[in-house]
Length: 162
Image 1 (cartoon, rainbow, N blue to C red):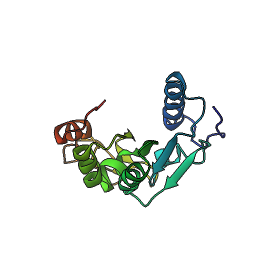
Image 2: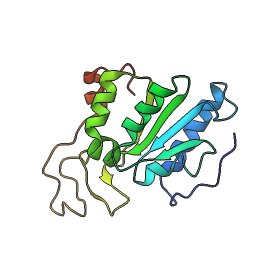
Image 3: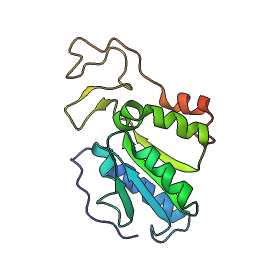
Image 4: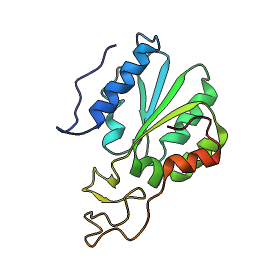
């Protein structure tokens, strides 16, 4: 499978996520990504498919990659449509789209890389930040409990959640 050199910081998990995804795709019998379309928003995890993968990929506005993916799937149902994003992009800014995608079950794959903060902009509190955690915007600890994104989408009716 042909890929480009990655741009992730040392110690970042996004490169590991990309590698694991590509290994799984290869083990499923795909020798290239020609049957895939990728969507991503804003943030570090959004850089996984593009420019890293040699494949069709769209960068969308913050939190709007899931609706774009749903549109692709409706127009090209034969494609494997995959969304990559961080927790701020997927569960925060795009949380409403995540919920409705789970309800609709259009057979898109959403991979949310959860680092529990808005990481690309300095580590601000996100909807997934644990209670009591210190961030740049919660110097005395987060006073809210985190969204449990997997439980939310499972409750909304997603056919597979991991």
